[in-house]
Length: 283
Image 1 (cartoon, rainbow, N blue to C red):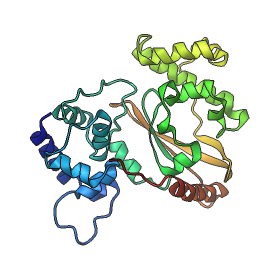
Image 2: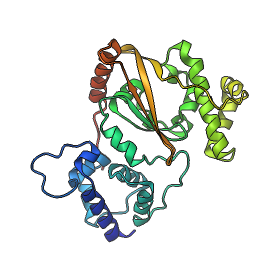
Image 3: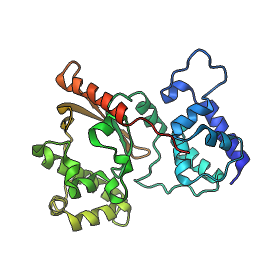
Image 4: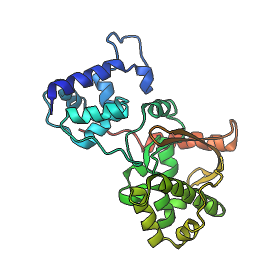
């Protein structure tokens, strides 16, 4: 661990970030360039004291989980993230379809859509980030572990994962998830983590096995989703997907027709989300 270089790198990256880039307001009393330490600590979900000690080169070696949080908070690119890990004396994460480091461009979009259901997913279908309205709609999928982190695996093995969709729409969603997994399997091969997911589903889900045997690689995605919530009811939402092809991640945004009943329910969902998922700080 190179404490002095790590401290210098963190300080320079913090000073290079402007408040508007991370969804913060600038205010009238800001004199120094970039973000304040307390703002970075908030973005990284850690205490100000811990982050300050890192910048002052007097901390113990941060864990890989802590480094990943710092990389997200400082909006680092993948190359910058790997450099951060090396300075901290840790091996950089292996770059795979399940890479959990969110592209800075997607992070900037997420910062500006905090009152809208938005999900960032990896190329393997793992939920990497959710806005609070998205967590209120689908549950907090970031806390899941093992294969349950993967949307297709949950869909075919856990009936509760389908609760947000109407029963008559399940077959369409099953086809979409299978085709997406087939495309990823063709890219990464049977020896990859994608292959492990496919093997597990073939063993556990007859429905998936039947769809997999059809070799469908393209299934039309419906941009109109009917989603139901136990408290606000049924909503008709437009689903827009933005792909980051370089990093293999997707940003999924759910919106409703302005002035519609679904829009009113989305507004209520945003309130529910902000009340239930107030940010917590790590140490």
